[in-house]
Image (cartoon, rainbow, N blue to C red):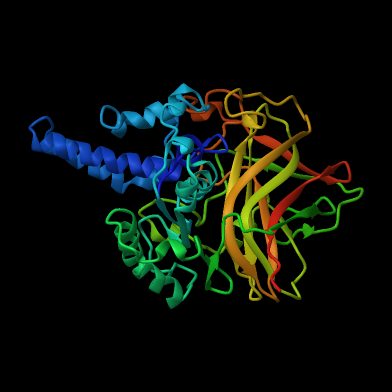
Length: 442
């Protein structure tokens, strides 16, 4: 399984926000393929194919298109893009293609993914769902999970634009075909090859760049530890006073930034599906951290290793001058030389803070508790490094921009877009924090 199980939150929408970067690229590729089929059957002219190819090769310009529903090159050849825009909430459209029917599936399954794969969450949730809810004990035990430092279909080498994970990662990737064949030999041909006797979980741990065999996911005995946000009210930019620690906050001022949807924070790396290799995977975030609309919170330099393996959740208290806005969060590993390497990220459209089925707009300056799902990672923060999070309101073009109006973002033109003054609270009565899955080994 290398796929979403909940198509709404695993791929099309993250935190209620359109996964624009990957979805527009994928739909543009599908549109080009459809035009090719039409050309082959005499239902399209060569110039139609040329226009479609030109659109795909101008993907950067396509990301700037507003309103989102005005993607002319997809009209008539990629209807699913417009279907997704028409269903921004988790409604019957998404329920009809939800694959979380684990109790009806008794098949052995091999779940393979990458920490920078757009389908990471689907892979993990597929394993968890089958491991816990498959209809028989035999089916529940016949699940295997492998996660490496890979992206989706574009990088199985462990070598990225700014990060090398070494031969251990790429060697394992090269051996995946052999694992798949052994799995099929056992469960299709019935050959007794012992694969079911091996540990069910095999993950690549970044930082130390080693493979680990585990007994389940999330790892047993995980200690979920809150890391609290602190500042003197000036956490803006890399040079601000934001701090991160396990100490609960006392009386502290809030942090404020202004989100301009016409000047969004650029997405740099992460779990993306794009033709631009440099925009995928672990990328240095320092250029992003120079912006005034990015809050930066870092631990002191670590004196001992901190092993973080599992799901990452942010619990924040926020307010906005707008009826709706987005809040983003990134988890970053800061190296001794200053490099701030992205591990994972997440976003929430605040109208969905209570429910992805029933949106609720904000009241002016209402302090709202929110939860942001950053999916999962496996990384050892080494001595001399720092743990860092970045908080903002955009990550574009990975995620579609919020207009801040509370209206239909898919159909609103750029003239409707407005700025939002957003605040993050971190005090005794509003203890904003990141919940990290800490692993302590003897």
